[in-house]
Length: 164
Ligand code: OFO
Picture 1 (cartoon, rainbow, N blue to C red):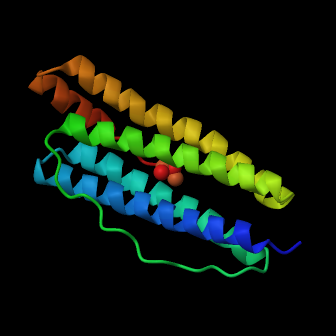
Picture 2 (cartoon, protein in one colour):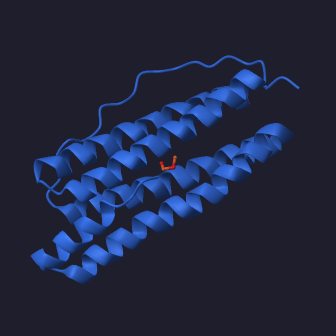
């Protein structure tokens, strides 16, 4: 069944949002590189790759449904933050906003009886639980560290181990 225009437009918007997420996390990686926090930078670069995979999952779905992918301009991400904590706070808030978008998209797919899109979006609902959890864990750990510089470097080393 071909996608209805409203669903197709909304999925195309989500493709853009996922690419924006990738861009935002790359910008956060660049900020961490400027502080020589290599582990945090590595974690954010890996996160950016994840976001590209999310975008491509939606891209492929639109193609498989014989509908048209319409790529739009990606907004310019923020480039400076006042602290490591501020970056993680923003990353967590961003993931919460993406979760909301996915839920709204799922509501639309249900309303339009687009069962194929609904199945795909169930994957995204579960993925967002992971995305929020992993970001919140780092945020909580940073809060526990307070002003400890050695603690920050330990966490940086740990985050540098992220491969996917
Ligand atoms: Fe695509 O999950 Fe994060 O934003």
